[in-house]
Image (cartoon, rainbow, N blue to C red; front, top):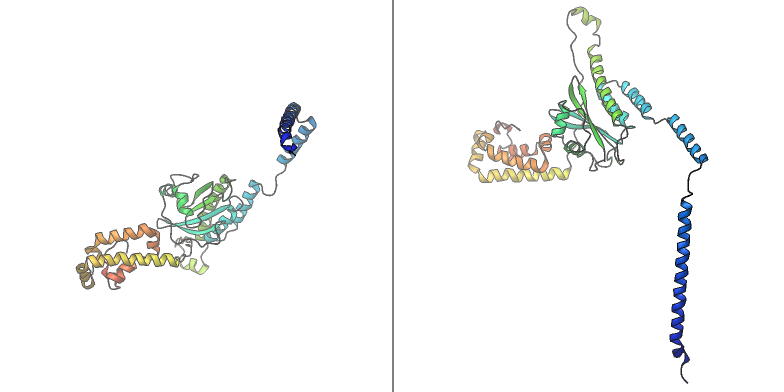
Length: 344
């Protein structure tokens, strides 16, 4: 008996093909009808007069209402905070507290002997300790310090140099302002937007720094005008009041990371050991007669330049790792035998 299913198979396939084609045609027609209806409906999609009126009323209410965090009120509160300072160092700490509502992150660097040293910061990485060493001002920072510019509002070498000791994350927007006392820059104030895209109130922050500059002078003048004891005034009636300006306290030195110190000491020993290896006669003469720098000036300068290139001038200035190694290995521990080295 033959299998009827094999005979009917071609006919079944033909019927299935016709049915699928019809279904596809109907689906396409339905889709086109839905699209046409949707596009026609879009033409009638307009806000009503009632909705427009409600939106206008809401906008007017939002303009009339100023919340507690309005910039003008925040600036007034910040100025009140500054005016409560009792000393110059207290004023510097209050300045960053006052900047907190106006900027996500802020930091203050004291200028001393041509270097910028971190004094205090707000909002930066709190888990990692600040890196050691002072910042050598870049050309744009130097122009700001000398009064050739009023602020820095573009990211560049200056921002990167100040940011390096406190964070590896660069914000999208920033500003650097000079803090001045008697027409001289005594500190740099850095503010940036943190995780935000822009500083919301850079001009208010600049005004606050200017106010702090004026208050620095006021605090110093207040100290100068303090009356002397009566007995002293009677014994020296014509003596002028001595002006003793209050020094701005330098930030406490940050200890160098142990691994960094170990690597720096190791490199210094290698560099100084090479000098001793290649110039044994001169080193022997130094140990009896001194004047190491006079005899091996070029070699010492090249070795020091290599050390500074690896670890930075600020590390050597603050910790004197290379200089100490030179004195210990080549001068038998006697600094007087080093001679007139400019970096000693």
